[in-house]
Image (cartoon, rainbow, N blue to C red; front, side, top):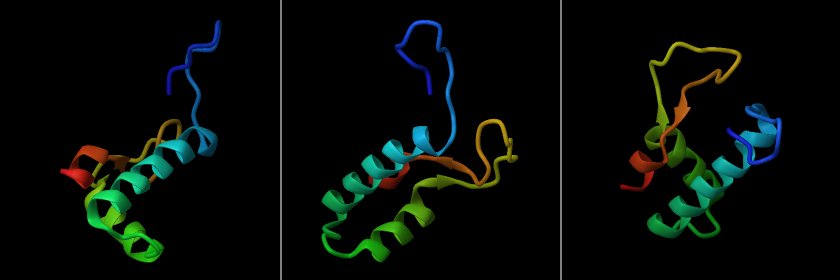
Length: 73
């Protein structure tokens, strides 16, 4: 994730991923009407919102990439 802060060009890790995953789940919950169904929302995200088959790169990602567009289209 690129930062708007001076002299900070790139950051990674769970603190950068958590807001993106949370927002993705919020979109899925809203679109799929999964309110109060967290397990269903998470399962849907794993099945439809993660690009698989991408070579893991520990510097950037470890288990696919988030694909929000695919999850909510």
